[in-house]
Length: 402
Image (tube, rainbow, N blue to C red; front, side):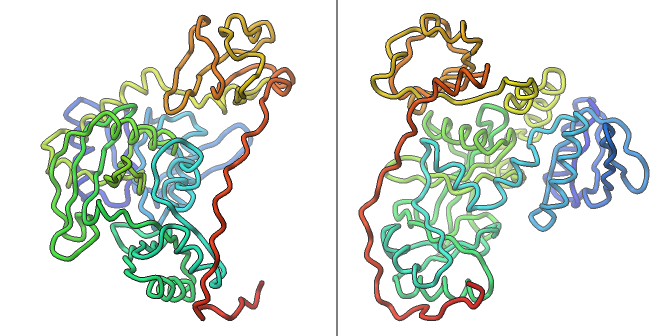
């Protein structure tokens, strides 16, 4: 395999380890400075230039895109995708995970634990949002902060409101998030490669620090995750569109709560804590995918006119409930069931004898006109009890631009 590691920091631990692991396995590998690419666009000929010269052929690239160059870096990754070069982390996956708000929005539609979070723009809505997540203490986060930067614990509603107002006045977008008290000062980082967790560590804050990041002095220790935490980590990474990811979780009384899904996880802390060859696991996975790559079904199966991918939700009392897939008549309508979502379980390539139940969500490929007639009634969202805004005196002015 000819592998390119996209990194502007060739001497950092993670980049060095990935390069060493690839070389040890006999692969040809080169570290490519992401900022030295030029993107060439022409009809039918997407191409890349590196340091002013046309890039040679690569089998795979591993993006290590820093937060400060997300836009350009993901453009480069997207160009590799158009050139049919394998990457475990797509440009969309990196973009989705880099924005804390966007990632939580995507995760929130799935049956996966996340801390209750609010995002508001108008200052008059801030205290109501704080109450909505459970009241102080709360976590206030800058949307694009990394390594614990821009994460603040506010002990009272008034302090939280003042922090949000201050950050907003500095043109920062912030999230207001429920504080998981039982997980104070510690979290779990699971390193996901493909469809499994290859390593996990618990990070514990030191002294009075509530942020457990290693960059903030946190101490890391290897941990064996139970099945529930492993399944949550893998699902979170896959929902984001990432096949190599660091998934950060809080240990709450109700189970794992996803904090963040990192598309360029550092390897130094987790390799040091677990003594595992994680870089090697990443390289091995990529080599397997180059030989037999996974495809984005929605992109590849929607190019035939009149055909596409759709999700069918089966409501209570629907005519298909209680029938097997073979009895459902879907095949006769030129519709194939690719996966079936039942609660938190995903049944891939379900057998014809599989019985359809109410509440099942079936990802299907076939004639769009036929599937339109089969889509169940949209599930109505649950209404929460109305929270009365508090009169705090905070934020009585309005933005001039509306």
